[in-house]
Every structure is written in structure tokens, then in C-alpha cells.
Image (cartoon, rainbow, N blue to C red; front, side, top):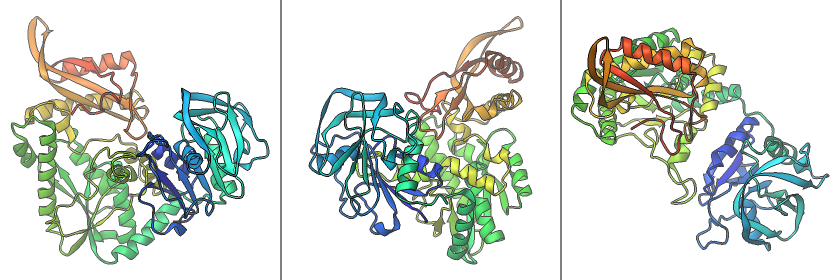
Amino acid sequence: MQNNVLILDFGSQYTQLIARRVRELNIFCEIKPYNHLPEDLDEYQAVILSGSPYSVRADDAPHPDLSGIKGKKPLLAICYGAQYLAHFHGGNVAPSNTREYGRARLGSIKNDEPFFYEVSTGSQVWMSHSDTIKELPEGAVLMASTEDVTNAAFRIEGEQTFGIQFHPEVYHTSQGKQILENFLVHISGLQQTWTPDAFVETTVSELKEKIGDDKVILGLSGGVDSTVAAVLLHKAIGDHLHCIFVNNGLLRKNEFEDVLDQYKHMGLNVKGVDASARFLEALEGESDPEKKRKIIGRVFIEVFDDEAHQVEDAKWLAQGTIYPDVIESVSATGGPSATIKSHHNVGGLPDFMKLKVVEPLKMLFKDEVRRVGASMHIADERLGRHPFPGPGLAIRILGDITAEKVAILQEVDHIFINGLREWGLYHKVWQAGAMLLPVNSVGVMGDERTYEKCVALRAVESTDGMTADWVNLPYEFLQKTSNDIINKVPGVNRVVYDISSKPPATIEWE
């Protein structure tokens, strides 16, 4: 890739944010664990060191080999990275008297430094460290201080090496984007050419060369990632792409028919497979959330494999893997960005499926996938679709799964999601859905006592699902939605609204 920036991950919760901010400047970057440096550093024009939960003074502190980087390439060291440069190059890092966490102000800035071009004295920055740099490393020039942190920013004389003890990537650093632009564009000389159109052009060309005349199978989910992957592949290989959309019986109401109709109008070669009875039979009597997931995954592979065998001479399996899936599945051995999950899209092929894998989106974040989709003129309705869990309604029905429970939850979900659209709230919410709880409660309808199901509604705001806040939906909307559900869905007499954030709760209940 042109203008490639290498971000070395020391385990900071903000590492992905650094990458997102760099990409927002239309500059391509990659995240690598600090202890797995790329063999060919010539591919990278600049390097950024992330923060870390570690202390540089600890015996197990991350200790990378920077001999091919420092003094040879533009280098920006953030927080732990800056302390690392100081500690191992003649400076002194010591525990701070008070934990330096939260908002601070750049009380002084060396005026003639290109690093702080158009950054104001008094600009707000975000600190997050318990150690502090007491003495700068050899050859260092102080560039900025805050009230509590004397050595807030420095550079190394004779090198394009910079260290800062604050985080420019977070929203709370008000001119963080300008600081990153100064380092990457004005100091490192990188061109801002990483755009959706450029990605499409490059990727389509690479797919044509990689796949040639081979046939490719893609499992469509109806979601954003698989849809954008399908359109990219279709641009490259046309009808050699065979898409399979499986109905597992756990989709939203009418979704199987609606999605097939939408794909037909997009010109994609799609086959719909209704395997709902097969999935429900396999799930019968199972209540454990993890076992439900495994059953659904196993049956999906079986169904998908059956259909794939009907595509003669298929050589490739396409997947909608995106960059966070890749990052989360490869950690720096027990430390940095400790593995959050083993993602089903990463290395998830069973041995009996003798297909090569192609993942056209594996270097994109979710927001970039949407922008790429928009550049290919995919309808907003597809690109703006809320995320929906792979196991579908199975993990929104707490307890065992039956056809009756699925039907109830589909109706509840339909009322909730349609209501969000009608009230103009759908696109203000990152994800929404309803949960069918394994409890009955007493109610009164007319003159009769009822003892029926309770459902919980959930709506959250997020950017990537890693953290999420519950959405303060209007009381009038919740009141109408509750009334509609209770009046229109037989078997439900109580509606509650989930006001838990992630963390400590998760978005889904199972």
C-alpha cells in the first residue's frame, strides 16, 4: 500500500483509535504486535508506538527492537512509547506523585516546532499514565509542558523522533487530529491518498489477478460486511461469484424474502436456502448460550457445505472479515490488546472444506466498509443496517428455542424496529433488538388475569461495539411501542427497557 504507517501495539485500549484517526487523514496504516515486527520495514514510511497498561520500569515491560526504526524513519511515540524512549535512551522514568489521568492543558509550547503547527497554547489533551518522564533521553529537546507534566512532548535532535505523554487519538485531545497530521503529512511527507475510491480500484484489480477465472463462494448474511464484500467481488469476477444466503429460522420477520429481493435488484448471483427446520431441530431442548452458538455454527457449516458442493469447481471461499476481527484474533502473546475473542471469520474453515480463503475487507474498519459501500453506490438501506448477531434470535431468546418463541420474538422485534424507523430514530441508534425472557409475569387484560411472557427492549449507541451506551429513547416512543407489543403480540404482557451500558453489561444478553 502507498503511504503505509506501522503502528506497534503495546496493549493500549486506544491502539485501534490511533489507526482510525490515521485512516481519517486518508493515510493507510497497519497495527502489528510490538514483538512481531514485519520482516520488511521498507514498506513503511512512518512508525507510531502505542500506549500500554505496562510500566517501562517493570521486569516484564514490552521491549521491542527499534534498531531498524529509530533515527531511520519518522517515529511518534505515544504515552508508554514516549516513556520507553526515555527509559532506554538515557532518560529517567519514575512513578508520578499523582496518577496523571484525564484532561490537561498544554501550558507551554515551543513556538517554532512543526510538530505543533496550528496547535494552540492552552489546547486540551488527554493523559492516562501512572509513571512520568522525570529526565528526557539523550539529545532530546523539550517541546511542550502541562501544569503537572513538565516533559509532555519532546523530540530527538538530528532525528525525526517525537515523544508525547498524552493521547492525540482520543476525542478529548481537542487538536489531536492536527498533531497527527503535522507528524504524518508535514514532517513525514506522506500523501493523503487512502480513499474509498482508491481502495475499490486497487482491490478489484488485486482480486482479478488473484482469482482469475476461478469460482468463488460467499455466504451472505444480509449485513453490511458480506454485502460490500459481495459487490467488490462481483466487480472483479462477475458471475463467477456464487452467493449463498441461508435462512436459519432465526432471522428477523420477513428478512429472508426481503434480503433476497434486495440482492436480486443488485444484480448479484444469489441462491437462497431455507434450512430453518434443520436448525430448529438441532437446537431443540438446548438452553446453554455457548452450546446454542456451537450448534448454529455446526449446522451452518453443514448446510453451507452441502450447497457449496453444488457449485462445480469452486476454488475459493470469500468471507466478510474486517480489520477488528483480525486484530482481536492476533495478540502480542499474552499482553498487548489481549485477545478479546477468536473470531469465527478468522481461520474458521473446517478441514473438510478444501477451499482457499479470500477476504477483500480484512484491512478495513466498519466505518470504512460503509464508505467503500457508498462509493460503489450500495443503497443506504443496506449500508445503514444495524449489526445483527450471527446466531440471530437464538441468543435473544434466553433459554431453549422453539418455533413458537421465535415467532413471538419476530413480532416483537418487528414492532420495535419499525417503530424506530417511523419515529426517525433508527439511524440515531447503533444497534437495537428485543430479548424474550424465560419468565412469566402476572398481568390483567380486560377483566382476566394473565400469566405471560416478558420482553426486554435494547438500544445502544456505539462506534464499533467494543463499548456502548444505552440510548435515552423518548418516553412517548417507549410507551407506544410497549402498548403495540402487548396489544398485538399474543403471549406477551410485560415490556421492559434495558438501561445497561457496555461495560459492565454486554450488548446481547447471551
